Length: 248
Image 1 (cartoon, one colour):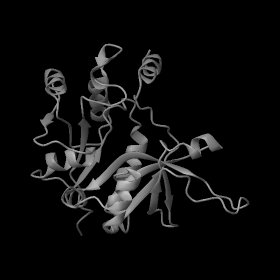
Image 2 (spheres, one colour; image 1 turned 90 degrees about the vertical axis):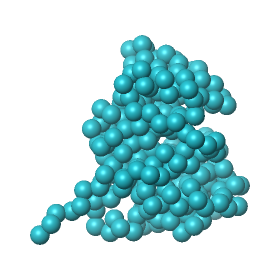
Image 3 (cartoon, one colour; image 1 turned 45 degrees about the vertical axis):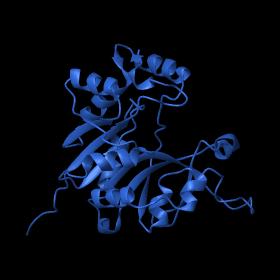
Image 4 (cartoon, helix red, strand yellow; image 1 turned 60 degrees about the vertical axis):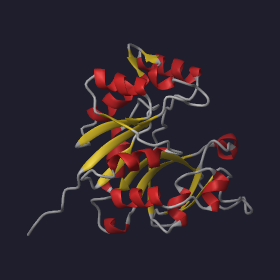
């Protein structure tokens, strides 16, 4: 008998130079190396991937990764979101699973990523189009903050909806509900990613400004995996200072 088929798994790190809140943040110094180089090396060091690439629209980021011996691809077109940037890059690649890593999150938790990739080896994996992470939210400030995207799932762990609004609405406050934050790290089947790239945005995604809603609107199945690890993203100069302290 043949064993399970081994998927070819790659990591893609979409990297824009312009960031509205903190321009050029990926090239800022983080204790001797740039943020993007630290993120690339952290993804490589997990040992989970057959290959790791940075995909960027920026000459500066391209040369930064190249001079450090990393694999980097240049976007040919302008892209609205990271998924589109990755899809263009993998279109002609022979890969099965593509995991997106945020370029501004240099503290990668290997265990969370391993759990995410495991779902494609489990029974019933063929019905999963993509998988993503969620973590419990504590306190009303976190729950009501529109920057925290909330996700609700069915009993099998598939996403039902994502919203910036606190969902579900607590009409009955005695119901024991845990609110979950969506962490924007995805493991895609290549086929689902290419469908996303070719399908137009629909009204729910346009309204909420949450790209993964597009998958739901077109009937794709998103398996959510719970993690207790809080991701540390670098969105502001203050975040960068915190990251420097963590590293030192």
